[in-house]
Length: 404
Image (cartoon, rainbow, N blue to C red):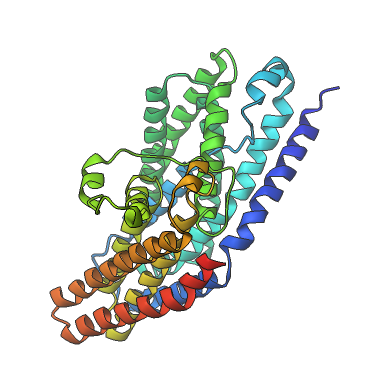
């Protein structure tokens, strides 16, 4: 006999086992050290900045954006799989308990985001509004939890709608109204906060009425969204361990390929060409590299201490080089590479060469920021330190790792 509750328990158990296998690789010593350093430095400068908070700082807007966006981000994890499109659709009328448990599970696992944002925003709230008590902030967090639950239910109802434009418009409307509610609440304008809450409830009830008129569950959308979330998790995990379930995304980016693929047409440059176009066309590496450069540059630009700026420059060079190492295993399941008449040593040499180019290029970009700020000491320290770090890290760690 079909038991929807038991099916959800089995799916949840499988999901926890699958993710925990890779989480222990993701949260390894390297990442934990970097995270501890980031959090410590950010907390120190955040606290110092709050003591000098400008009177005209738009604290209400920042609080509203943080709370409104975290409330609107409320996906429902159904843990459905592609075979369910065949085997579970006939049992849709028995799946109510399964989907109810999925909604409860999704709400519980997203609570950490709510409390994390509340902990980060709390010092800003009390610095901007020192006359307010902690009870008022706790009440705001309670309202945030209510809006989180409402958004979760509304997202679930709207997933029955087949029109993607209607779903996007509904999400945008609820997000805007949620931000408005928290903006007026932060300013203490409770009349307008109440009015926007009433408008939000009207949209919420409209979503419910629309879902009631839908023929049934949009199975294809639910399966696609869960598959995309798992693939996003696998792409992160693939930077730390081999993930056989990962489906690699490839993007054309022809102009970039033409720019980086100019290598001599000889056997010893085979993997130079392959790793370059993989870096450019894969859906992971180029985007991550650019993000690390931008975030690192932002830290360097905003942090006032020269030595911390240099340290952040080296830290982001380390993160980029460490993450790009996974290029070596990117084509591990492509069997036709084994017929290349190219020695393994040339393959390793090609990766090492690309890592040198990317990491030293990143160090050069960071050093230019010091030059723009007319910090000439920081320019030389960042450039020289980046080159020295790249040489030591690649020769002392990367070569041993890819040779293992």
